[in-house]
Amino acid sequence: MRAVAIILVLFHHGFTLFEFPFIPIPDGVDIFFVLSGFLIGGILIKTIVKQKGLSLADLKVFWFRRWFRTLPAYWFTLILNLVLCFFLNLQNISIKDTLRLMLLKEKLWQYFFFLQNLISNMIAQFFPESWSLSVEEWFYLSLPIILFFSLKSNLKPYKAILLSIIIIISLPIFARYFFSDIHLKWNWLFTRMVVVMRLDSIGLGVLMAFIKYYKPVFWDKLASFKILIYLGFFIYYFSFYIIHENSYYFNSYTVTNLTLYILMSFGVMITLPPLSKMTGNETIFNRAITFTSLISYSLYLLNYSFIMNIILHVLPKNISKFGEFISCLIFWISNFILGNLMYKYVEQPFMKIRDKHFIE
Image 1 (tube, rainbow, N blue to C red):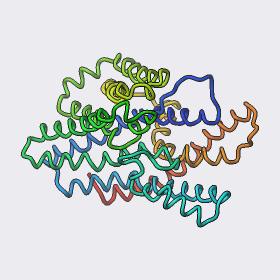
Image 2: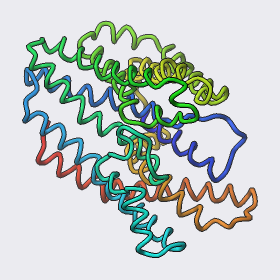
Image 3: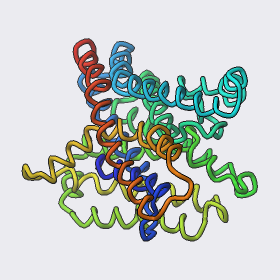
Image 4: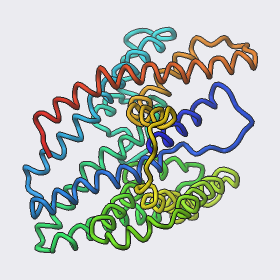
């Protein structure tokens, strides 16, 4: 699923260079959200059951493991993008004006702390794809805190976890509801990319982890229905297609906010049980899928603001259709080469430190 999600991201962004016979393609973000909720939710549930609760020491281990996994590669890419942004701006304005633009007007320092889209739209068109990682990082921070206080309220772990899931799902939905069509006219990005508006998508993944752990019989029953894979994909894509083709982003935010966002994530979540039971033979195709999933985080970080920006900057203005195709091919090849290098030399070293010092 992770491999499919990142391939969708690359196709979605690759259309900037070369438009294939146009078929609306979702960007794969909702798949990442639900999958993250499922995996991280499973880790937290197992910790609570094993430790008979959630202590501050457990929170420390959880957060440091997540941060050592995500922050080094993110900050590395952020610095690359800042350097690239600085030199590209320097072609048109002075050093002083460039620094003023980046630090004061566009407030790019916010990106180091995932504040760029916490409660409002991103100010700048800088590193725009980081919006989804920001949602995930705030999820990593908020769900354990909600769980911690739910468990302190003397609820049994089962009920405390369920209450926390309800909170993490319902609050963003209520927040989206209060921003009606009138308030958001021509501003659909507010609900799509703002952290407090999207945590429910990840929460639905946590709900599936809860079902898998506490309702194994029901989970196995769901897993036996392979038709859920096709039904889930249909719901996921159909919801996206309605948004895309009928411009519901611009015509009815209520429909988008209260149904289509949820349906897209629901479509992904119901595929999890049958997919969890699937196994594959050791083939070249399966190795390629595994490789893609391993470097997916690096691919996500590098593909658009860094690699795409450089290609667009050096691309001739009057380029042929064949030239556009070649540039798109270079985009794909560059992503897998640089993504593999960053995985080996940035991600893996910090994961080794994490596994040595912070054991779950």
